[in-house]
Length: 175
Image (tube, rainbow, N blue to C red; front, top):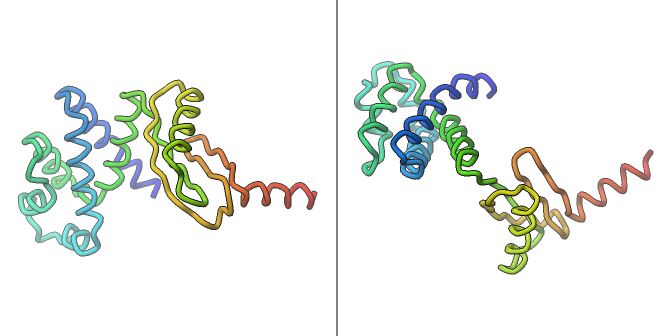
């Protein structure tokens, strides 16, 4: 995995620089997400590793209809370098670079039960205050948390779940 990230990094940076220069962050993000999703399919992955697959056919398979000509050329460069299987990593890194440039923190809130709109708004406001940036929140439900929530915002993880509190209590009692 770390080797794939190392190989993907320059391509993600190049895609980001191109999107920044064109002022098209969102379309590039959408196109990369589409291509990454297609490339991650096991049947397509097997096809992409076939040495008989020509570059133009591989690009045609992965390029979304609404993408720019520049994006198609980007995929052609990846195809020439045999890096099309790295599209999921490239897309992920691109999204990180985009979020940083747009001063947005992406956070995932996993709760024991579905959050109400008011609860989610309160969490967003607290995260905006803590990070001093806009917050893009996605939610998930994990009943094994028993109660509370876990907030994962990149390098920061806030575990306010009952499961986490019980685990910390168990560790404290064992010591």
